[in-house]
Length: 369
Image (cartoon, rainbow, N blue to C red; front, top):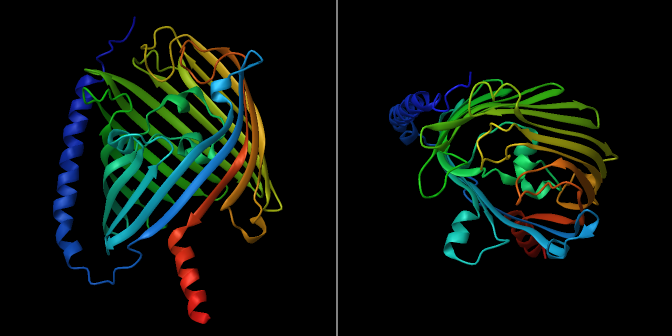
């Protein structure tokens, strides 16, 4: 017997009310202590720019897709961070790849949030944030990804919201609870998401796990359970993400899921070689129009190489790459990225610059002269 799709509705409403109450209480009871801080303000303005340029050859069934191929400016990003007061910090990342209007500018604002730390272990944040979904593929910055799962290509991962995070005294584990706009938000009707996220680092193992309740229609929710696992052995890194999804409990039992796995090996601090596989599937009962469409079973397999010219200094600010992926299976989303018999090759250059650090270096050299 199928579980009712409204199963999560009442639970979501109760969770929202409790989350907002918790946020108000925490903020109101700790504002006084923030006003008593006498530490010097530092690092109020840190500014960085990053860009990536690629040559791309995208094909379907062996035929090149001209509109998607050629030389492309993939990313041009501005990042600004700083400390306003001893307990208040901010962070902003803005993409400039496609900005034609004021609305484009706002939509291309990945995040812009203020964080308040009343005590060392507690952080309260509000603004436009990353939706706290687990997994290493999801966690990686887009500029550092060459090909990815069908889920990753469709998820709207930057939304308005608020979060409360607790970090252990040792700093090894952080538990975050977040209330935000749902990634399924239509911009016409507000939908909400409730996310519980754990990040933990313990020797050779690091976890990025989450439990997510994401509204996709009035009174209807999609439940995610995500296990993001990273294993490091010397210069070798293994990442394995397991994501289970469902709008009903029976769907949630491994009928709709994604697997993302990557193995990488760093050679002499300069060359990183990697192989990656992703698989996305959704059963026929999965709600249409979500990030992975019903009756989809699509795999992507590929690999690549990265070269860091300044790697001998431990510097990752300049990177050359080449990567290739091939898709096979069925994707019922006609606008999907991973289509059967599709392939994608990219080769390019990525660079990052700390503008404030560069300016200080120039000033110091000028003074010495």
